[in-house]
Every structure is written in structure tokens, then in C-alpha cells.
Length: 142
Image 1: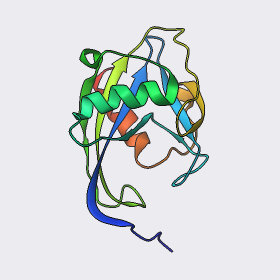
Image 2: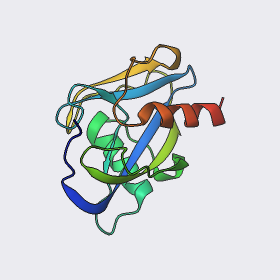
Image 3: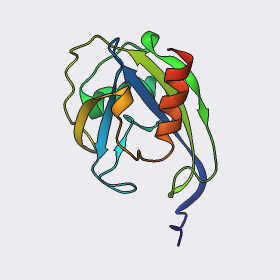
Image 4: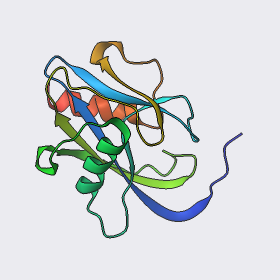
């Protein structure tokens, strides 16, 4: 049984693949639906009048306490599959940022935990299509 769609309008989000030189990626444990309790990339809604890369840096800071300048974000791509989010049609702009090893992350808005994971030991399932986004980011930059 599929979840019902709640909003017919397209929603825009921004996600960040924050990685370290030692090949760890920052994930957050979601604190609410959809995918409550699942691990996901830091990210969230692009506000009206806000550029996606600005939203990406803002969401990374709000959810994990990790601050990166917008110039340090490199766009990976746009994910726009209609069924990628059970809430409706969400289009995400995905970015990558390399941050120093030892960067501290703390759980902030909408997350239970923020944690660095080795890229070769990720959780079995990630929320939404975030495994695909991580794969695209790390394949292009390995």
C-alpha cells in the first residue's frame, strides 16, 4: 500500500553529501516522518527566494552544526523522480562538500543523531534515494 500524496505542487529541496578526505560521509537519523528513524543526508526545503546552494549550506548547519561556505559546495545533480518521496513530487538539488577529518557534527533541527559513516560501511538502507546520491557523488570524485 503506498502512502497518499499530500501536495500536488512540486517541492524543492537541497541535500548535501559532506565527505572527509578519509572517506567518511555525514548522515543524519531522521526524527520525523517520512522515513522516521532512517539515516539520510542532511538537507531540507529550499525557502521561497532562496537559491538551492544557499539552502544546502543552511540545512547542513541547522541539522548537523557543520558550516561550509556556499563556494565549497559542488553540485552533483538534480534528482526529480516523481516517486522519490512519499509526500509528493519533490525535486532535490544535491551538492557535495569536502570537510576536514575530525569535523564535529551534532544533531540539530529535525534529526535525532548526526554521525560520520565510513563510505564502505553505510547503513543497509538510507531514506529516499540518498544511496543513489551518495553513489553519484563518490563515483565522480573518487
